Image (tube, rainbow, N blue to C red; front, side):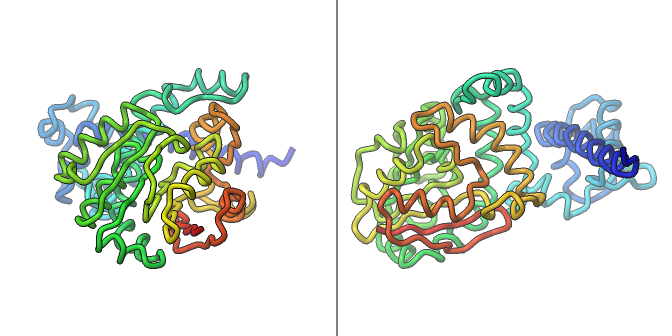
Length: 348
């Protein structure tokens, strides 16, 4: 037994345990408005913050101390301060790095832990629809800031000729649209185009319709509850898969169906979690996050469906290329990337 290695490992475990608890405090801070009430950057006492948010002052003080010990807020003489950098991530809903509400995804996995354990002991299947409702709302809130920051500014412009089509008036399918965050963002940016959001989870497409109506784009955006292999509309200029293809039981079938639904000069935009092609390449902080999420959410969902390919969130560009080649596509390339996403383009 190497005691130095043991102590180093226990340090990692303690750090991770603290991080898990901190994600719960972040979610509490977001839902109670505690971070937003500190967003002005001015020092505030626990009692004053509790009064602003209508919360118990003793619990708020403990929450603040936990945040200060973790470096999420700063302790000052007689108070606490949320620095502007932390406010970007924890209090500013328009920030591209706003991550606070996304902790609902983690919370839902803890709520569903018995179901996930049963999946491990059984055939590995745990359907998306059986997750706690925090999962669906958390996914929307987690991914929306990245889509808002990148989708129309860098991702779509990186595709060959797509933006010009959308400006003139194209037809777009958003497969696996969830609550429609990506669909609405595109619809607002390209008022001459029409959009169809497709998802197999009826409660999500219902919410997506409300999101589109609230954004004032409901007349050009429709949502249908169908699988990635059963929608019937055709002649799309662009078909998008945002962070969802690897969750599907039959991604080859989904890609093949998209090919059939495209115009001859149409494009598929595939947005997937950033990954290399091996465990070694993916042994990074981002890869660690995605492997863990894939264990709890993505892979069990794929195994619950027909084929059950189980790509996982770290499939990588090489494996995804094979999926599209098997589906009949002849052109496949990496259009661009971010630290968190691969943006891939497929053409007939």
